[in-house]
Length: 154
Image (cartoon, rainbow, N blue to C red; front, side, top):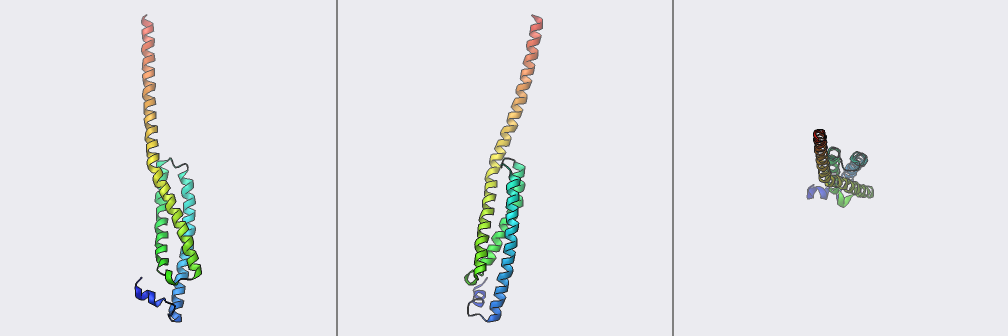
């Protein structure tokens, strides 16, 4: 928003300009309320889908699902801040709530992103363990067969 637009929203603005600004802020507050509700629901679903934060595929899907909400909330915060110097108390309250939901959403995404490398390493270790166990089982079977044949010759 340019400086001239801020001048239009000043306290000295005519009643029509003030009413227009108030209407835009109210519409934005409604969008913010809707966005916060959607993001909060998405956060809850992300926590459930992430489970114990060990399944790589679930974590990646959850991150993909949650990331757009962080972007949307950041964009709404940016739009609301354009009105910041001249907003009403309800708009300020929405801004605080929006910030809290944004921080929580970003925090959940950060937790998911931090868990992905750990989950990848755990998955690789488990696959290696399964492969090693299969190799060991094969060696035990071969050794047992050779021992049985050796006993037969004795």
